[in-house]
Image (tube, rainbow, N blue to C red):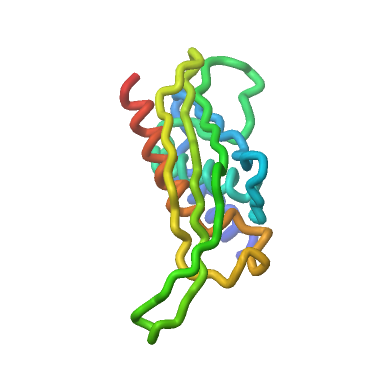
Length: 166
């Protein structure tokens, strides 16, 4: 009985702590990113999309409905799209580790935010250096990729900027 009461209380607190977006709040749909033809992308685009929806929602403090799917009711939505345009491995000589070389993934991402009228309100290309990794064959394929946190933060800032101009 105590466990049931505790679970109910924790559930109520969780619902109270994360308020839903207000009625009439803008909706942003984050589409799954893609890779440009010829770019070998070993990471999970669905994981990237899921984490990006969560991070953009948190960054916008629940003032916007952020989702991976278009709302069934239709209505005006902004969308986020993107493409991995380049990915390669660089071999950097790290002087701080006695001249030992390490591999880093360099990833270029083009992303854009389109408003409900179809106009691109954010259009950016960013390059991310993932830091030391083993090799492409060591990629953790069920992850969003090594640049995910940086990319998600950039996209969240871009969405926030686009919405503030409305």
